Length: 260
Image (cartoon, rainbow, N blue to C red):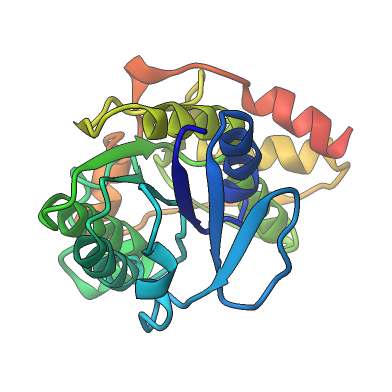
């Protein structure tokens, strides 16, 4: 065995990929869940809530590493604070955190910024909480997952006219590649902030949505929308991209597998 790992967000898009890879690498795996579940395929499930901190202290007891994959549209800083407090008290040897590319380059300073980009501010704060916790750590920043952009395009395509933020770009990455990297990092020693991970191509957000619309046989009008604020300006300048880190499956390949 390579030790034991607690995975937060183990039932989400990334966590579902991480867990079997950890098992294959020889780890004992425990998954933090808000609801009780029976053990499956050697994976233990423990009840806890990162939003309130309930059950988190018990969840981290007896594990060597924590792989923090839990994330949502808001509150990631609160979740990180509860997790790292428990990890510090338990003497955890390594916490691996997944963040987003641009967390350090996207200023979120106004109400407008926070409405659209508050999740990035929370990610940046979570990074600081992890780094300043006293627990040995590794943080990986990744660009937008294919699945996230697919969900975004799917939702926007329900509108007869699709508003698209002008100048926004995306560099979608295959979450399976991110999962591989996270397991590799979990196997290694704490490394601090490691190089970004991103998909192989950069697209305008309009092209991402338009390709989904075309692939699903729909017809839609597109309306450019100028988003105000410093965070939006950072996105237009490419703060959420990592041009030198591109690899893996393209958006076109992913789209073809999802919609045929």
